[in-house]
Length: 289
Length: 306
Image (cartoon, rainbow over all chains, first blue to last red):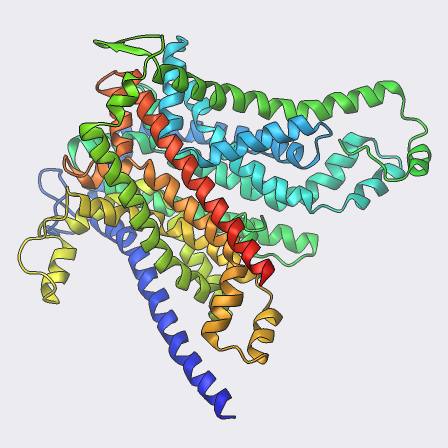
């Protein structure tokens, strides 16, 4: 009895310490995000961001939409992210399926090794490699090269998520479909894809945000005319310092991410309810690996 | 792909109509499924890396690179200023990873096992920074750490520091930045690892009389080890190649090896030296992975014996 009491009291002490640490970490994690949003409303001095809060204004947000280069970078960034999302999801899903199922062992191993390598090679190495590759083989940098350079990483991440899901699939369902006379294509579309859907949704969101947010590869491959929003902002703040405009764009991007996540969460819940299994947000993180 | 039927009898029964044409189509489709991503990844990942390997041995002369075989680039990459910055980068990556893990492990453990009905909400909160643009999260530290900025005010207010804070544009700011930036990367896999430990296992340990710390050391941590290993690599590898944080917070004094590699390709146009530096980083990362998987296997074997 005393043991139990002591155990419980000890537990309460360490649990409280853990809770405190978690709260402090959350504060640490959110501090810069809150700061960026707050300072987006700062007037600044002569269009430069200042540490002192010189006055509250929403002017920077209006400026964002009038700023030609920001708008053109936004449109490039969206185009790159949409293409990256399509290619990342489709090729990543195919790669994940092949890693789980391909008949040829060589193919399976080749894909697994490549995907593993992409995940562990530091991004700066990948970025200089792709730049070197394009310049030395005489390819003009543009939207296509940007998408090509940005996709290997999302493909690899998507492949891992889909593979872990595909390995866990119940083969009996496909056999049943085949026994009932479904050709392989139909069985794939009506039996395999629906089971993979949560993984594929997560994959699409990941691919989109990875390509949209990328800084290292995107700024290596950007040209004066083709630059994503992230790489444009990165270039302006490293060269010219921070402006209220930069924080306003940041705040808008943050709001957009929140909306996207909320939509994804709702979609996921709707989908899993329709499928009749309980949805867990952990799956959205690719946590079923 | 999915035409395999488990029993020979099943195969015969299942597909009496499967003609050779259909089988050919299915076989081709199966091969295409693997070949398309494979081709893409070889072309835009493996081949470019091959270029780096070739260029790392090339001769560099005044803004031009002549292919050939020399080890000069490696000598240069491992000497003087470059090796000093390389050492700093490795130190940052190791210290930063340790600090990130010290924060992330208890937080992830709390979120996964102790948060009760707040679990999902807490995980969502922890994921928001993970999904938020890297640029925004690091950029804001520029304002926070600026001379006369909020962090200086708070530290002065708490009497932890007096006068101006000289952290911005120095390695200190870069260190804070990398720890901050990679903390969410570690929390997510750790959360998954801690969440997956079956509760009966921990209860069994308690019922058998183990103290909380004993359970933590002998049950919880070994069970979570794959997740811990993954988190360490997920943090340490990108940290060792980091160049955005130094560019934003480090100024001239705070550069890391990644910044130098990029510089060789952009400003200096010495692709040969840059390639050799990239190879040095790659080899060190490969060694780190080998060591970490070796340690993991060793620990697992020791446990199996115990």
